[in-house]
Length: 214
View 1 (tube, rainbow, N blue to C red):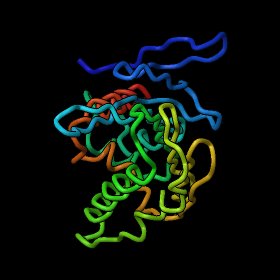
View 2: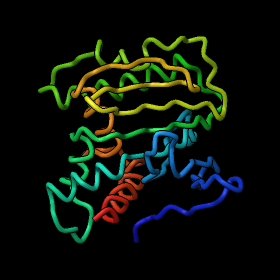
View 3: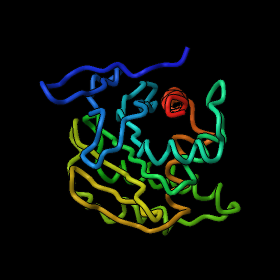
């Protein structure tokens, strides 16, 4: 059975979903109107211990996503298909990946290194096996290593109209890069065919949200 989002109210006028492994609350809607379609957890093994690095929410401009799905696919399939995920990745559709840090020992330079490595690998898969470290480093590279990533710190990466990838750290703009390749590579990490094991549940949740749009 597919995992579903469970709604709670953080206050009288704010609906949230709780990432169960970290207890982090994600608003069901962002200020720009994007809707929360899935939540998840990034885990990493350090010295044999499973570390909860960050919780995350994947948001989408569901109105435009719905129109694209109906245009390209038509009727709702019985279950999420790779074609559906690929449309979200490739289309000029607004997406936001909201990261909330859960591990208190995380430093900005550590986060930037792991982030750029994962993004670099994804770019290489889409780029005929050719590396483009310069492009990968444009996302978080401009962010200062002096920024503190305490528990609860937030990083938001958004695909904006025109294939612009915008990154904010604790609400401050870190970068804005216009690149279709970069946008596709970034969201392919979480929604692509070869996503890593700890992202598969959130991918399935996103797929179920897309089915509901039909």
